[in-house]
Image (cartoon, rainbow, N blue to C red):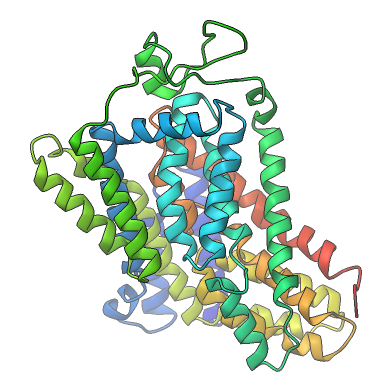
Length: 441
């Protein structure tokens, strides 16, 4: 048995064990990476550990540390109250605002994880406070990031269009962009309906309502009737003046966004620097903030990213991709490649996968009967909608910033279940809509 098959079977095994038993899948992934790396690929420990994504780990630590401080000093509550006023108290609009803001950020060039790291904790703060499904809110942020992620000036868009050009394929920037925008918007709409969005449409929030159920609201967003007409929810705190430490925290948020997005600096370094500065200004208040860093999520992502590198080193994606390209039926080969992109990207970097998966599909396009732009769009969308997975950067960020109203095991299972559904069904639906009909072939 070749190493590519050993790596695939080990991946299936760790996924099954991690699903059936309450064992952190990151720990399982480290064990699998060690055994497969040493005994199937003849790698030493240093080479195996080289697969750890230091960038991703630092992002998780830095962002969750910064927002732990923001929760401690009430800045998150302040942001919630202000944003609620901005949407006129309409609870149902809050998820869509988060979706749109994240889409705009990635559409103008922000890296998808950076946009999710900035908007995710705020969005999930809303979810915890107002009884919105945390799964819906977190996935709205991720789908928003992917909705704008293939604009011609975005990171994904530039990568995809450049790879198409290098492969001699006719590029269609708008086709790829609109495919991702439409698919992710539809998925967000489905989540909205399935996870209680229609109930939210009848609710209104009064940000200035006196504190009546503070404890319930802080534990997870009890929605309570308020005085006057309509349905209202209290924020759990009386509107108050902005304190100095909250102003400094807001300045830190803006600075993190500007430095990370406008100057293309690592958001993990920027966020943890801002967190340390704020902690130094009030060390006693924030001495326990570091304990709020999502350490189980850090282990999960570190282990899985290490194994993703082992999977790539073993040549498993290329092996399956070339097999698909060699099939007699072009459409079936395209479907298999969409699944390869989706499954691999659910555990690894979409940014790193796109330059690999698109050239593998060139032989299918050369055989005729398939539209190049739509096929690449299907590959691109299939390889990025799965970023809702808790093993991907974006999904892990949503898990790391869960509201207090839901336990981590429950939220993890929710994200994992949704990620599995998207990975199993998403590529098929995208392929069925873009490739199977043979548009423009």
